[in-house]
Image (cartoon, rainbow, N blue to C red; front, side):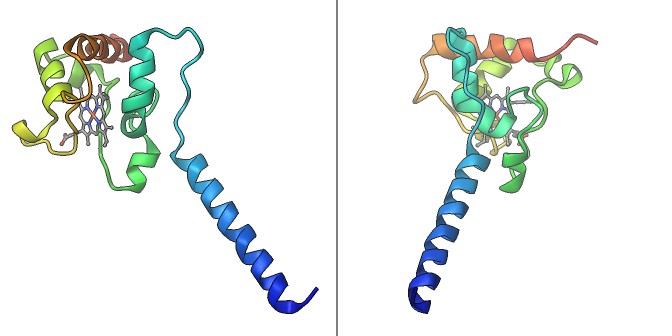
Length: 126
Ligand code: HEC
């Protein structure tokens, strides 16, 4: 094999490995078949930043995003359902917490209510 060709093959393999690795890094857990809608929504839309268990994704940390801990009963337990609903619908910007995007344009109010319930389910009492 001629040398330039070998270099080209190695370069293509390196780009492939990089892209594959990046895809693996950025992928999030898939909901199990038959999972309830709220779980599907959460794993699809929220776990990228908040992590599957609400403890914050290290993937988000890579991009210097600090989503806090949704499973923290101290913090979330004190929040009203209205607060959770509003921050999911309108995002954090209106209340000075701009890291959290709003989902009002993509989700119905019914879906947002489902997500509020799901977030409630992440906090363990105590
Ligand atoms: C782009 C990353 C990102 C995505 C996607 C995202 N969030 Fe957030 N979220 C954040 C960040 C960052 C904060 C913290 C904002 C701050 O404190 O400044 C936050 C805050 C929150 C809070 C408030 C927590 C508290 O202590 O007050 C809730 C509730 C929340 N997110 C729910 C969700 C839900 C539900 C989804 C999916 C529909 C979602 N987030 C998607 C980044 C994200």
